[in-house]
Image (tube, rainbow, N blue to C red):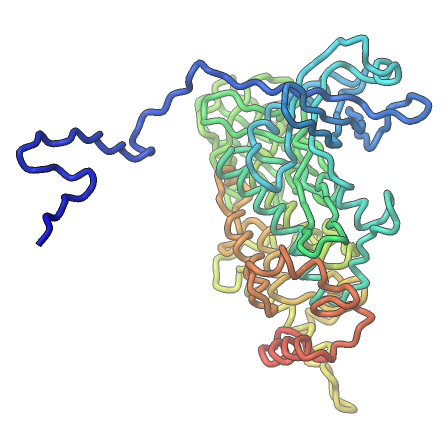
Length: 530
């Protein structure tokens, strides 16, 4: 029988054992260091000009202009060229706006790393005389270099930049429109979630014009819609208590926003009160009898005084503001004071709800009008099981069902006297179709922020409620007949288009797949059969 050789690498009898290297510990337990060796690959950025040598402007705002540019890689074996945009500070703007531009650089750099936040490729300041003359005349040297997308969401909906690329949301029925809107909302909400929970940054100006869109390539079946959250110029980094905040929110600097999408604390950022103050007491007596939306983390000060005090809570029953620290200045009676509302994460959640309402209504509904309608519910503070968003909306929709249900001749509508002048126009889209109750609950939980089932409380600057909203938005896919992970990437580009998986508004809903979903939704009471 032949001798059997030991396996390769095994120790042989009489031989000294082979030395083996000890196994490396897991990366998580090793101390990692950066070496001194560096690889350098330079890039250059050049403005794109027209035949007359004028830079091509692709957008502008209150204090910045955006120009088309081209990125080139140098010192590389491959020559990459791709379009980018350069955002430059306008000459002569107010010092506050110039500061916002510089703060945006820092905040945008901080939130990099999420696929639905616009990519910052570089930033800085230059006095280079080689800049195109028009830019030297109109702009300062401060700049940001950003990835280029096709248009913003406002331009996409209204067709103002390219009418052929207009997204006619009202041209889709409610079911298909919701699926299309989720293509925008889920990336935006997940970007806000990343900014809040990972980077501790609040955007504070979420609206259609601050959402950039990259259109899908019609030649590629796997091409998808790209959605990016941009423009952090009124953003804020919530630093730990006692450390300076990165942002501009002081008594002389209210947080700007857009009326239809800004939170109530931005719209009415300063609240004026008639008060009595007593030195050494943390309680401030005020005299307004109507609902005063002041709460924890807001700032209190008398007019013409520099000392500010953080509010701990508002005792509305006793009409007292309770400060975190006792009032240190001499007491005064019957004086005017002002409270500045703190604007942070809850404002972003409100704006997400407002944006969702605007889009799902077919870019027809006014979020500000909706909130004004909900304000009586906001002011209702009684502690009982009916003071929740879910209970409120179910009551509202029950009244709507009663008003819309067929009546026999001579029968009276089953509506309480208090509801005789009830209107539900804010619950319908631009086609007059009722918005689904589950969708309306997500919108209201975001915009009403003082109920037990709200996504957050208006004063909770550390809220993680945006994660609940992201989950509820994602769950709408399964509620309306789709698996959440399968829709946005491949299926949704064809939703609502002729010849797509579900067919468009012009196509009849008689296909087997469409009929199956309609039957299932009708059986669940989620959608009425046509």
